[in-house]
Image 1: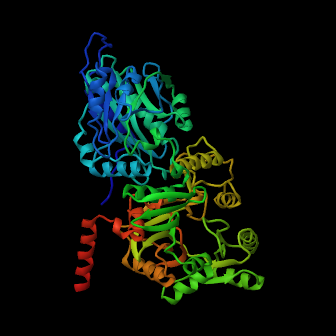
Image 2: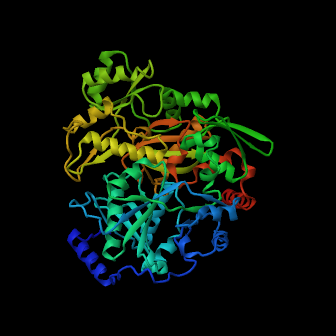
Length: 596
């Protein structure tokens, strides 16, 4: 189906018509009485407007109506210390600052977004995309039907940023109109749930979403737009201050629930774990499994359940044998093992003999150089085409391992398949780090900005290094770090798709070709490893052709949300922690397959 998209001028005309349909507000009337005990349901939870509650006991009682897995927020609470005294075991003061943008002083930017446009949320697929971004940002999801039920609401407005090239939703923001929500005499508004896809390429998505919402409310006659931001979110605060927001002395209360636990209980030992260990620990705690963090810096923890104890390092557990781990550790051994199992592998050579290296390079034209042992993409050079480049890449790889492999360069997409208990749990295409020019910023600055976004989304685990490999990749495209990329121009700044060097990941679990799944499972069985990430190079994840690259004994399960990687990992470790109904359904499914 061909996707049609309105021109920017047509979208502007529609926005102007929408604004003309909205009645302009009168001047603020302080004699107007707002709706008492005002509450607005936002899907992820409720906003309770504290200034409309005359009695703190009524506010506390309303907060007790919070639904499971939701996050209610009481805003503009007057005398919050009194409300806290009413329920000190149930409530806490949120450690966020409130910022206000006076819309009469706000000035629009002369520039326009590059590479994307902003529009209202308008379909079920938009709602699913917003929830995908919420999941990536560890935010509370919203039932898709809730978005749709509010599509004509005057009180709540959802905007999304859509990538002009791909049509994907890459950002979202929610606005609440206080006048339509509860008759606010101050004619205020507020911004909530600003979220940008951590893998989005265009710069300044968050800034343009904030600007768009501000201009929307200004056109409607709102006096100000408020927002709440965590006190230590320095990058967000810097953005808001740049746009003219000022800090105001309003306070927010929340309930002590599981979602908010780290805010009121303080960081526990697991807070120091990286995202790949923390996703497993969170799932374990959800099931009532005891956790002991044995070395947070290294990602080590021990799980206890029903008299059983298992030590883990992220997704590597005691169930993975030392033999399986050593096979994965040596890429040449891995290749030989899976090749015997019938898995397709690229041709390979051990670096050393210069004449053999030269002949190998001439035969294939382009090669990959990588240390025989190593992880996280360190020391890997892709697309090496000259003897000088080859010798330099080999020397660089020797910084990580004395034995260096030269491999036939197979073009295509980098596909990671996560196999747990010899079943596919997740499949995703990984793409190299990429930036998109805005016509004003140097490549170096764009890389640094994109790197900050990746670090924020991954707890510091993913960033784009400004190293020799990045410099070579940029130079191969005819640029250097000080080049200013034209607006909308995309540029790959790494050749490998490793997530630790800024690569992005795109889920294809429901579409991956069955032959690729079969090959991944055969590779896992050949190594005899219960949890692994199998890497293939493929023309497309929807086609059967592939070439095996490597097997990872410690795959990053957090990279594959919302696929249930952590759940299946805990199922493997502690089968009795699976709810009885789920175990029974799985047993019946296996029984049916056997009978077939």
